[in-house]
Each structure stands twice: as structure tokens, then as C-alpha cells.
Image (cartoon, rainbow, N blue to C red; front, side):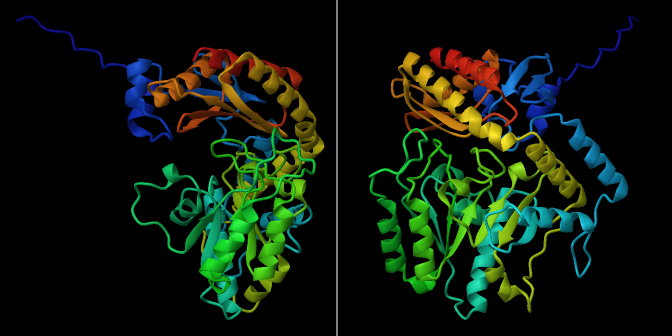
Length: 453
């Protein structure tokens, strides 16, 4: 009888395991496998400064794969040391029933000195979605405790993004992020976005801010006595980087005060230096009654978010605390990461670098626009930018989006690519540690990719 040698088990690659067991955002693996067999998912294994490296040791400028959460760059040893030290000292204890810890207190005190919110009190969260969700709860509860429980409506803007929970998705002004999930949260309204300010030049202009009268008409139509708050990002980014007209936020602040509404400013993307100021609202001289944060708070080293509430708003919670539970609020290790990220940001002048590199980035994007006729719009503020391309001639727009992602990767840059109808956007927003050469090389890599389509 002939014995057959046992068959060696087939080797399962890291790509196969990831594709089988992990849900990836905005990834159509069936289409990717048809178009680029065996190429996806791309497996990144380490980071260094503004760059990441894949399992083939390919070096890529991370100008978007971090989703806005990599202000201080990858692989900072000083942050890793602070995290390790914190784990050894106290890895976790909840802020519950009178128990606190010094790490949350130190972080809150430090943030109180820099945020655009008067006499702030902080609630800590794990993400931007949680931060905005909590902001809505605080706004409604504030009105209820002041004798106006019917003030429950939250107004957001078309073209905004506020998160992925049910309420935050409802507030988001992009239909694709909230369709197919069944009923959304009630009492959310949307108004037109502000008039946009060109390429990012924020000087006063004679353009009339058309969206504020529309917002006022919405408030009057619904009844001011039913509206709790307005939520607005300083600079929204879905579809394109959208810098508001210079008078918009002053008018929005005045309108909220006049109608007794709270102004929630969503700094999740803009905060901690991304726009060339520590916070995006600094460009417009406005303070929020409630301000939400995440991403840059720890530069992505540990998940963390925060909600700042002004002292005036917080008065209603002094005698009867807000009943809101979050197991990992103010996680000691996240607090350590946040303190370390703030140290790096301040010690290395990263906010100032983002402001200085804005001109370099805008010049490179404008140069690229002249050489790629398909480009219809570029916008830059600090180290936050977008390029819009017309793909109306493409029979399969989604395939074109996938192709641009692939070609940009091959050229050595990670960018965020999406589309709105026949407009395709590429968001280029690298870590704040980049220099002129990084930006020039990164934009040229994006240019190479755009030329292929």
C-alpha cells in the first residue's frame, strides 16, 4: 500500500486574514480583487514621523490615512515612554461616584488654559462621535433644567460630518453616511452651509453671507422655543475643505445669543493645530458654549475625545450632576498620551509650522492645478487641503476613485479620496511635522496619480 505524504497546510497571508475577519471602512474588496488581484488590503506595519511603511517596506507619506488624528507624526518614542510609564503607575480607574485621579485633573487644567470656551468644565470621551453625542445631551438637558424641556431640536448644516453614532449620523449633513440604517434620531434639522471663502484666503470680502438668513428662517419656522442648539465645524471637510466666509461665525454667534440657543463648535478635525491655529475657531474669533474634540487630542496614540462646557452652561449641573456614564472617560493612559502630544506640539512649534507650510502647500496645489486640467478646485488652510477633480467623463466613477487611491499609493502617498456625484475629492493633510520637501514630494506623487486618470 502506497502511503501519501500529508499535504502541508496552505499559508494564510496577513492580507487574507484581515480581509476575512476585519471590517474596513470604504473598502469594496470584491471590486478591488477584480481590478487589482491579490493587492488588497495594503498592510502597514510601522510609522516614522510623517511616513508609514508597509510589509514590503514601501515608504508612504501619510497625508490622509490617519483621518486627521496624526498631528505629531508616527512613532514618537517620548509618547510611547509616557504611555508605558502610565500603565505601570495606574492603567485604569473610572471617574465614578466620587472617585477621580490626578491624570484627568492635570489634563483638564492644561486644556482649560488653551481652549476657546470660557471657564470650561470637561467631560472626556473615547471619540469625536461620542463627544458630539454627549454635546447634544448636554444642550437638551441644559434647556430642560432651565424650564424649557421643549427645546430639543439640534440644527446642523448640509455638508457637515459629526460622527457615526445614531444621533451624530443624523446631524451629519451627508446622506451617504446615514442611509440604510433605519430610523434616525428625531428633532434634528439641517440648514445651508456658509458661503465658502475661495482658496483659503481669509481676508474680509464683499460677499454676502447668504446662509444666515436661511438659518434664521428655519428657526422662526420651527419656533425658537423648540430649538436647543446649533452645531458647526469651523471648517467642514466632506466633499472638500470648506472655509467659511469671514463674517459667518460672528453672525452665527449673535443669532444663537439672540434666540437663546447654545452654539456647539465641533473641533474634532480642526483642533490641535491642523489649520495653522491651535483651534479652527481661532480664525473667526468665536467661542462655543460647548466645544467637542478628539483626534488631535492624543494625536491618535490612544483613542480619546473631550467636551468642554462653559462655566455659565455648567451652572445647571452643579447641584444635580448630569447622569451620563462612560466607562473609559478620562482613561489614565489616554490622559498621559494627550499630555505627551501637547508637549510635542508646543515644544516643536507644530502649530506654527502648520501655519508656515500653508503657503508651500497652496503653491504646490496651484502648480498642480495648472498641469492637470481635470482639477477644478483647490483649497488649503494650514495643513488641511483638498483637490476637486471632474470625473464626469468616467463611465464608472467608483472605479475611478479606487484607481486614484491605488495610483497614489504606488506613487508613495496616502490621501483620502471620495466622490460626490461627478466631483472626486482628494484630501491631502499630512502630519504637522512635515517640511517643504515632504509637501513638494507628496503633492508631486498625487499629481502623478491624477495624471493616470
